[in-house]
Length: 71
Image (tube, rainbow, N blue to C red):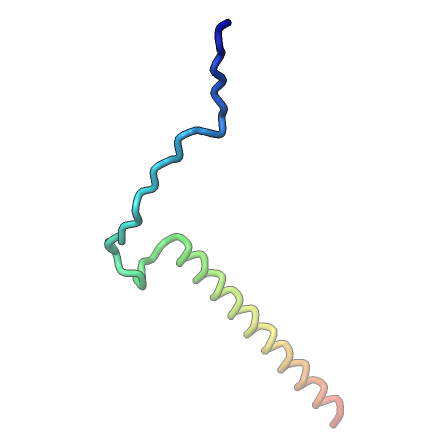
């Protein structure tokens, strides 16, 4: 009678782990470069500041009109 060897799948080789190595910084962590995102954020900032000043001027005009009515 011949014996049959059955290989089980749970006895596979474990992968070798490589040790972690410290990577040298090629560029500084804090660095200022003008990119597309810098331009987008700058335009958005200017737009928001413009809207805030516009709303403030409208509020001041309304206050002036209300003060003139009450006098």
